[in-house]
Image (tube, rainbow, N blue to C red; front, side, top):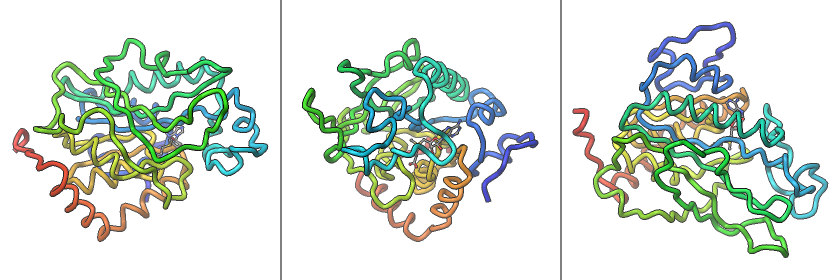
Length: 273
Ligand SMILES: C[S@@+](CC[C@H](N)C(=O)[O-])C[C@H]1O[C@@H](n2cnc3c(N)ncnc32)[C@H](O)[C@@H]1O
C-alpha cells in the first residue's frame, strides 16, 4: 500500500526506502535529510496544457486528439502560468540538490517545444544549477507535425551533478545520444520506458534512487531490477496504485534484470562493500 502523508510525519529511512509515498513532492522531500539519496531520476509534468498550440490547450482535436496528455494527469492539470511553473520546478530542483551528496547526481528529463514560433528550451528552469551534460533521448517518431519546423523526435535529459559525481566504470561509452522506443503498454499518460531508466541508473554506482514525480513507478521498477533501493513520490493515488501493482510483479522484473546486468554494464558496487 502506498504511504499517505496527510497528517503524518515521516521518518527517514524507515518510511521512505523502497516505498511509494503518495503526496506532494516538495512536502515529502522537505521531510528527508540532506545528502540521503545518491541519485535522482525524474521527469516532471511538462506543463504541456499551457501551450500556444490550441489543440493541446483545449483538446479540441486535430493532431492532439489522441495524445494521452490532452486531459492532463489525474490529479494535476498541467496548465500553470509559465512563470509559476518555472518557479515551481526550480524549487523542486533546489530541494533535489539538497538531497544528494557531493558525489550525487540528478537525471532531469524534459522536453523542448516551439511556442509562438520560437523554441522554448528549458534554460529558464535549469539556469544556475550545475548542469554537466545534456543527453538526447531519441524517441521513435513523433506526433507534433507542423509545417513551420521539422518533426521533433527527441527529449532531453539534463545531467545535473555535484562536483564529485563520477559514472560507473565504462558507462561513458554509452555516449550522449540514447535511442529508446517510448513505452506503449502503460496506462499512465506519460510513462518512461523502463530501459531508459535502467540506462541512467546502471550508469552510476548509486545505492539509493529517488523519483519525486514517480508516475506509474518506472524508476522504482528499474531500481529494483538493478538491486538498488528506491524512494518514489507521486501526487495521484491512482498512479501510486499502478506503481505498487507493477512492483508486485517480481517475475518479469527479474528477467529484465538479468538482461541488463549481462548486456549493458557489469557494475562494481565495491565502493560500498
Ligand atoms: C511525466 S509524469 C512521470 C511519469 C513517470 N516517469 C512514469 O514512468 O510513469 C509526471 C508525474 O508527476 C506527478 N505530479 C504532478 N504534480 C506532482 C507533485 N506536486 N508531487 C508529486 N507528483 C506530482 C503527476 O501525477 C505525473 O504522474
